[in-house]
Image (cartoon, rainbow, N blue to C red):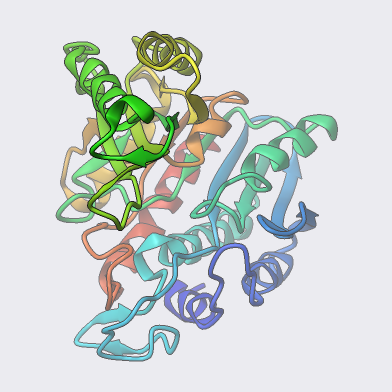
Length: 374
């Protein structure tokens, strides 16, 4: 099965989270045509849903290998030189929203699965697919894994098709990810006239002190596999249009990307302690979207790296860089690594993937399956 026509079909579904726009149906149809049993599962409700998810499986017994990924995409934005959902090919490039992240990889997975089915290999091959990775990820892979566990589906290993390659196909393989925490801090005061500060309570100095205190801490120096954790202030808001009014409230938002020397709950408690020290009546809301994790270099990473090198001649760097992915959920079921297309254009206008890279990725995934099911 050639992967590019399927990638085009998927791109032509404008599946901006949480909309499905037919993408899960396209993927399920392709897999059912190969003999997979497909379970289409809808989770959640507005505003973060409903979300379409897919678990597809073929074969029985061990080993059980899973591909994982997502059909949803980020909004297209403005400034495209072509229709972002036309999935046209020009100069050897497939252009469209999701070409790199990650509909090209999904098509490559299905192409590899077709070759696997044709070989009649033993064991179990499955697909763990969500329509809620780019958004809140509330009703996607995490809930799908709960359903799998309740129904006796537990892979031995998993490969996620995120666009991990940095500059060229095959140069990077992800073996872990840093955790992510967002915090919203609201410091309350009392509005008043700037000429009479004794009759008001300015929240801004306390918020500034909180942020300075938080940023003064060096969280860590990094580890063998992770870069140092970092705290970034991502929003600062007072919303005071008047020059002669002390505001009643000041708000800030921050994000911490943390390595495996920390847990989200520990960092959340630290933030709350610092805030309470400067502003006991402040409101703090914290959301941990994922913990840091590492799949220690070993049999799975070596197997995938070997397939990459056999196809491309490159020995991929083992990395934990970048943002979060749904591998943060999958790691609770089984060892997981990530490998996919070059990601320079993901989330940008004129997102694209080289046709030759999609075809080579399908061959790499097929090599992985041959090694797993040998």
